[in-house]
Structure formats: C-alpha cells, structure tokens
Length: 199
Ligand SMILES: Cc1cc2nc3c(=O)[nH]c(=O)nc-3n(C[C@H](O)[C@H](O)[C@H](O)COP(=O)(O)O)c2cc1C
Image (tube, rainbow, N blue to C red; front, side, top):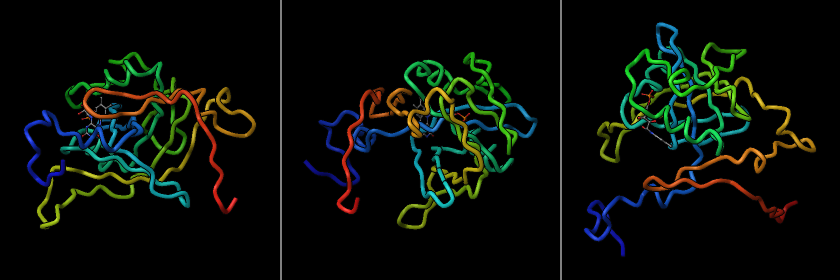
C-alpha cells in the first residue's frame, strides 16, 4: 500500500501518528498574561541542539500554551512518567484561558528559578526555557497552516537526586511514557546499549 493526499478507505484512521513513534510528550507549563499557570501535553515535541539545549513543541491551533509562550517568552517542560499518566491526560482537557490545570489535575507547581512559569514538581526532570520563536507553519505552497511551532532555549535543568545513578540520569527508573498513534502509549521499561564505531 502507498498513498498521497488521499488515504485508502481501508485505513479507518490516519496512521501518521502511529508511524512516527514513540514520541516523547512535552508537558508544557506556561503562564498567561494575568499570571495564571497553564499546563498541557504536546507530543509534537523534540529537541534541536545541545549547544545550547533547544526544544520545541507544535500546537494544532493557536492554543493557550502557544499564546502564553509567545506573550511571556518562556515555558517549561516536565517529563511525563507512568505514574503521572492520568494527571497528564487530565491536563489535556480544553479548559478556558485562566483555568489552572496544575490545580485541576492535583499537581504541585514547581518553582522555576530563571523564569516565572512553573513546572510539575512531581516529575523526575524538568526544563526551564526561554522562547526563541513562535512560527505559524506554511505548507509547500507557502500557504499558512493551522500548526504553530514554538522553539525554546533551555536555561535551567531540574533533576530529582533519586534519579541520578553513577553520574547519569536513570531514564528507566523514571519510567517515561511516550505517545503512539490513536489512544496508545508506550512505557520505557528497559534500555540496551549500542556503542558507535567511533567510540
Ligand atoms: C498525550 C497528548 C499529546 C498531545 N499532543 C498534542 C500536540 O502535539 N499538539 C496539539 O496541538 N495538541 C496536543 N494534544 C492536545 C492538547 O493537550 C489539548 O488541546 C490541550 O487542551 C491544549 O491545552 P492549552 O490550550 O492549555 O495549550 C495532546 C494531548 C495529549 C493527551
């Protein structure tokens, strides 16, 4: 099977998100113009460099996280783990602007050091970011799409001491979850090592 713009009828749902897997979930903390915190998950999320550390998330629509990250030029990332899955999912509810998803999901606000937006205190790791750009993406014809890409530079990293083993962040101990297609998720439960030819 192969197809272009038109998906064959046998594919009931678009498999795009089931093919680009597993996707880390950017749990994005922001603050609105009135200083009310906002929290939402974004699986269109990745990293872009290590000098400096840069990360991004993409919103389908000009959602609160985009508006806040643009207006206040900052956002946080919190790592979503298995034990936080239900809370993460709760924060995806389309609450009105000014509703505090931290409170709604029973989560504790972690206090950032460099910026005002909070992170999820229960998460093993979190990043404070300064927004570098917010871009409404264009398609190949130059037409504006409904997707908004937010790029940020990491200015402070938080890690709970219990997750540092032998000088490394113990990812498996954290049991991060990842988004797949449809309503499916995956959990990181083990890791294996592969040295590079140049090592
Ligand atoms: C696991 C998960 C991943 C999500 N990823 C995205 C995403 O990448 N882009 C997006 O626009 N919405 C995504 N959503 C939906 C948003 O979280 C949802 O629309 C939320 O209400 C946005 O909140 P905000 O307006 O406060 O930013 C995701 C939802 C879940 C549960």
